[in-house]
Image 1: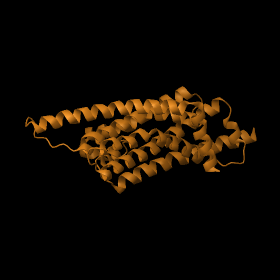
Image 2 (image 1 turned 90 degrees about the vertical axis):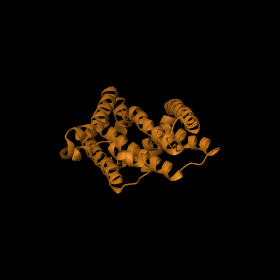
Image 3 (image 1 turned 135 degrees about the vertical axis):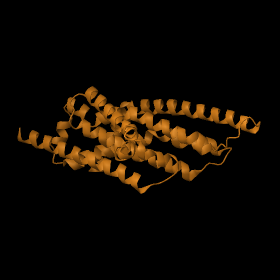
Image 4 (image 1 turned 45 degrees about the vertical axis):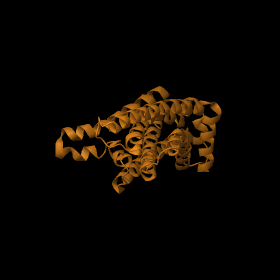
Length: 255
């Protein structure tokens, strides 16, 4: 049943055209950044060949590392738009009641909607997967580095989406929910800066920062601690989303 709900969520965005608009936006933004990075790489490589620069350039490090970083920032902007569609928008349009009054458990509903929206996020990542093919036509690429960075982005997307669904399980207005999700993203991002301000005693604060654990992945390194952070955070927010929806379902059934 989880897969059925996931298919429904994905097809709903697919048929409404909203998914195609987001894909077009993703293609335009990421494509422009990719073009800019390639142009900058070619310019600096030419300077290095002429002897005016001694810096060593690697395609994966100089192009895809910053591209991945920009991609994470881009998805921090559009994830609130997707997350508010999961529960808040349906609550406002009174279609969520069909789920709450059905025999489906809150766990099934939340996981189904999460999976559907997560597949939507992966669909929007397609431009990022296609771009390396353009590089491979002429030059070699560090596939391991690329796939590791892609794994970090996928884990980050799962965490941000689960946080967004947690907020959506409480909110009644999509606009308020979207703004709240975005503010929470900002707060979780600046925790890293706050940890640096407090020095050695504040290192534990940086450990809770949203982007802090993505840096190793973007550098081509897989750290078990980073994987555990994203999986644990995702599980934490999904669990409390289930608890919140379960209470709302019990209330509706008693009413």
